[in-house]
Structure formats: C-alpha cells, structure tokens
Image 1 (cartoon, rainbow, N blue to C red):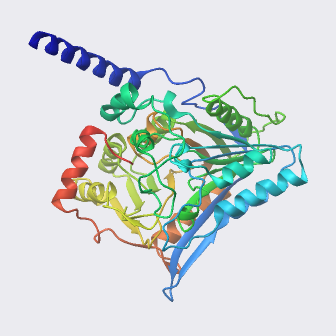
Image 2 (image 1 turned 90 degrees about the horizontal axis):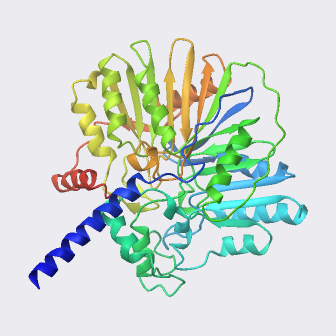
Image 3 (image 1 turned 120 degrees about the horizontal axis):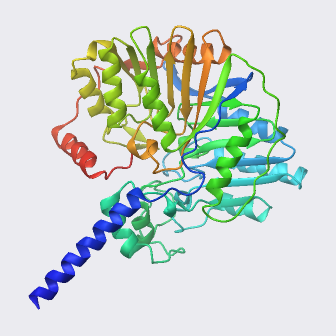
Length: 472
C-alpha cells in the first residue's frame, strides 16, 4: 500500500511539473507577439489624461484621451473596434467617479442607431463580470443593439502564475460559473457577489490587458481603461493614422480568434513617403524585446525618461543600472502603488524597486520622483529615449513587469522613432518636463519620501518575485 501511495505521489508530481512546464513554454496562438513593419507617418499626436493639484491645492482632472475617443466614434462611418481591459462601472459604495463607461456605451449605441451599417466590435476581459459571476449591464446593452462583444478567452495564453495555474488547469477549470456568487467582490465593494470558481480562475492573473480604439480614420493606443473607478487616473495615449491601422486590426483579429473565427475590416492601403516619423506595432513579448534593446543601445550622450505604474521586471532594471553605469541620465516618474480604485495598497512593487535603485552604485545617474497621487493612480506606460538627433518613444498598455513584457498577457504598444524637432517628440518631452518640474501645479514629489518598505512587506515582495505569485 505504501509503495502504491509513493507511486501515485511521484506520478502526480510528474504530471503537475509537466503541466507547469508546458503551459509556461507552449506555442503562442497565431498572431500573438507581433512585431509590425515600420511605417512612415506624418500625423501622430500625444494625448494626456492628468489628475493633479493646482497651486490652490485643488484637484484638477483632464480627460483628453477619453474625449478624443468619443470624437473618433462620432466621426466613424464604416467600423469601430475597441479593445479594453477594464470596462465596467463597479465602484466602492462611498466613492464617486466619472461615468466613463455609461458615456462611452451611450456613444457607441448612438452611433449604431444613427448608422446601423457601421461594424462595431468590442473586445474585453472577463474580469468585468469577474469570470461569469454576474452579468454586465453595459455589455448586454451593446450585444442587444448589434455590437459584437467578445470576452477574450485567455486560457490559450501561457501561464504567468505557474505553481497555482497548474492546479487550476488540472482541477479548477472544469467547473462552470454562471452567476450564483456568494463571496464579496474584492475589486469593488458595491459590485455583485462572486463565486468561488470565479476566484479560482481570477488567481491565474492573466488578462487581455490591451487598451485601444480603432476606426477607419484613426487609432488610439492608450494606457488607460474605460472604467469608472479609473476615472481619475493619469494616463497617456497616442493617436495615429495611416497603414498601421491595418496592423492593429490584424492583431485584434488574432485576439478575437481566441474565441471564434472572425474577420475584421481593413482600410485601403495608402502610399507612404519618407517622413521624420516612423511607427511600429509591438505586442506581447516583442514589447519587452524592444524596451530592453533600446535601453541597451544608449550611451552617455543620451537620456531615458520612464513614466509608469509598475516597474518590476528584473531584466529592465538590470538594463537601467547598466545604462546608468555608462553615464546615461535616467529619469523615473513612478506611481507609489499605495492606492488602487480607492483601496489602499502595500507599495509593491515600486517602493522596494526604488529603494534598490537608490542604493545601487549607479544611483548618481538615476533620478526618481513619485507622482503626487491622491485616490487615483499614475497609470501611464511610456518610455522616451533622447538621443543626439533621433528619439524613440515606446508606449501603450504594457507595464514594465514580467507578466506584461514576456508573452503572458495580451498587450499592445507602439514604437515611435522621430527626429528631435518633430511635434510628437516635443509634446512628449514637454509632458515629462511639465510633471518633473511641477510647472504650474504640484504633480510630483521627491523619492526620498515613501522609499522604504516595512520588513514584513519586503519579505512578501521577495517571495512574490521568487514564486511569481503577483498581481503586477
């Protein structure tokens, strides 16, 4: 009997280990981890959503990205494709947020009513119904009025939380969740109840994390969600035109085909002439590849600006230190990770990361500031590298974390390469300088504040890094 138990135990370990290995290394679905061709364009515009305190200590909210998205919906006549990670109005009961989801839904429904032939597709993540625990009023309204809604099937993606995900794949995924939740909604206290099976799926921590809008006229690649509880977050986005729209549509078609066969429209191919601006689509792991390559290519004549919600990837941090070792000036503008949708957070990962960088031997070339957040987050994911003549911008949905940069989540970024005198480069540099110097308002504060972590939380941080069991 004892031998039988040992055999079964060893067999279980083999199967469990094999499940971990396969789902970490398995082939990606077709169309994932895309590295688009380089396009020459003339029209790229930086859009910013900024929440800040003015000189009178009053909080000011600007929603340039959201308002531009609404205008692009109004101007569309042929198709609208939206891919949005968070698309819900769930909030804590004691908090009031801008009704972004209601306005956006209303604009889509209005467009469909005015022009029934317009093809509207919305891709999103199952987090918005906490994995089928309850229905979404907005998604149902869109479906009932002719909008194609796809809650992306991310099971085909690789596992970023392998020790747990192997258990879920072997035992948890076979249960069916359709309502009947009894557990509290940890993402929004006023949200509907959640089932235990939904929580088991949620713990895989994988997502369609993309945030973009595409029409026949333009595309907006953003760091921000259409999500009420995110309504005060600071974000950045870029509006682009031209042939890259077809690259984005092809990428979105691949994401949609994780659920079903679907053909998204295309725009007529346009002639391109050499301009001072080049643009390229990057998704999933190709984002990490280009971020690391661009930092690695810097020398002492260059500067690196990074504005981001999460900085945690070890490879990126090593390249930042190596660049500082080459006398590259580095400016990091980070969220202190102490608030999320009105809920308090532990300061992970940015506080221990900042402490590490400030104690490193390369610290003299690394300047760090916290964004002066209230109940919102500093939510961009943007890097600007200044060189002698040609600068590089990488921006979109991907934080600088393992989950976002290495083929685990669905992510969409763009890479812009442009001469220093171009408008988009000047806009991006001005954006960073405005926040860094507190020009006209109190945007940022020195990293000397909030740069230490209690020992217990630091131990948790190290365990999370070791076991890969994180939400960032």
